[in-house]
Length: 216
Image 1 (cartoon, one colour):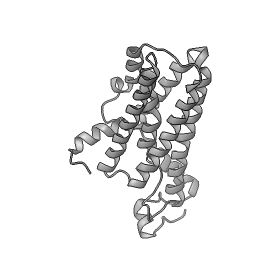
Image 2: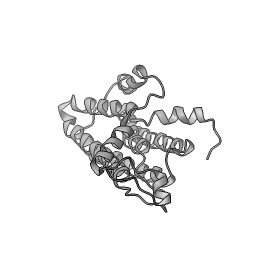
Image 3: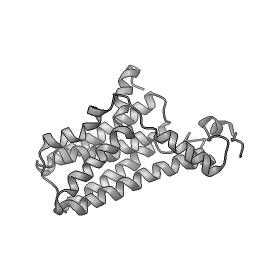
Image 4: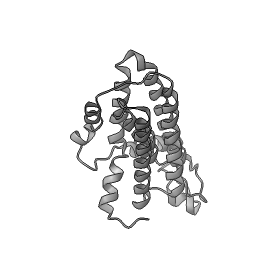
């Protein structure tokens, strides 16, 4: 892993937290839905985003509740930070560049994927996820954003003031203290434990050692 201070990677990883990206995803939907010509595109964005986020949640609940994972791959579920980043940032950057020509919008989306890859690296640097979890999360998020951009390519797209779009997309940074984490993981853990009727959630240690929590 690249030898950079932990504080750097912690700063990068915050841009992949759901506390930051869920509002950004909502802003994307709002910018698309305000114009009647792009409401179909807005619906596609919402559908794809919810599908990607749902798969992340299902994979985490399946592991924490029933231990469904892969010890050889060290896989306990998709990396949520990486998935959301690869789904949201390319579309956010594309939307910011929506007033410019096609090649600029493509370059903006590529920049978004590169930023998402950096966020994925931060999850590895902070030992928050395994390589398989980050790689699969990036693939899932890439599928969401790539399918959306492919869908909208032959349809009307907004031509927005990039300054207003950028300010709106950065609103989480204005209202949240840097590093603020959403309680998403804790909520999913509670759901998993209750659904599986276990005393606690499955952990990565259980996966490696072959142990399991006691049922209630």
